[in-house]
Image (cartoon, rainbow over the protein chains, first blue to last red):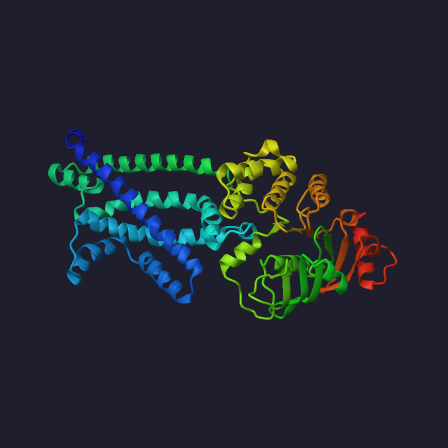
Length: 221
Length: 264
């Protein structure tokens, strides 16, 4: 083996990786925030609506879950603007895609969470005279959020890793930064070692922080 | 009976109520009147429709035929005879006038003891946070849990949770309190503290309709006992009469005999 590891070039361009990591986190946070809104609205709508609405929502969920993310990214970034007269940056396009993507997964998470709220609690809410809307807001959602928090954390961490797909449309996130350094320095082993470590460490840090949040809420179950 | 009820109209008037789950008839033309201040206990074998009857009174269950009136107002449906459901808003307002305590407590797990009581006071009765807190503390004191106001349900024993459940129901000042086997899920040593609270509410004149398997308590605390079997009212009368060994009702006698065999 004549290959010697040399990290000097990686450190010289480390700002590309650091900036990329921050952008990855930003993409994940914005997308899950929008995804939570989509997921909550559709889940609440799903459990209270008739067959037609349920079929449409289930169709959206099934479509997203059975198409590879990279394909969705291409479809939204290259496909949509050629059909419809809209223009957006690669970053906006990716956020839209990842939001729709996480939204589809979260509809399922929230829907099963809503159905897992014990019926007795809903009865108690009815018995004290809460209206359906008040029961949803003050009884069903708080319990549902506690039930779904672990699944929500897991979704967020997968989403953080999924941001690497944005590199295919040149959004300068962490994986794109790694590719840039690779093309310009040819230190392929070093750069991917460093980037792997960055994904791992950030992923674990997020997991740790989210587990702390979960534990704080667990006492209330 | 009908003449007496003109002089003192029933607070709760259940009249020929029937209900079926699919092909299973759970209530068969049940009629029962409860006047203000009365404590009426429903006993009977499991599957006799006791709990379903209670749940029809605050329309947690709908019923197929007959009518239920509280203070002269038709429960659940727009008027007697029609099967037109009231609006959800109407139903909610109506349920606020009946308190219910559940076998499995059903406290809101994310709210403290005080928070459980305050929710209805704030959202349904429109009280301010401070007013609701004062009322919650008053009722927690009444059930002997003033020191647990800020505890979450998970931090309370079953007996304490159930006392919070009672406080949550009575704090709304309901016209009638429905108690659905409220001690059945409790360890035997915790039953007494809960029944003590119910007894003191009865002494205050709270109108109550309860389902229970605590025969001694039913005998001591009720004005009347209703025996249900197969979805119908099989016997009604004062406790001394109903629980007497020679009451003229074969089903009731065999129910009580089996009950005594397993509980004493």
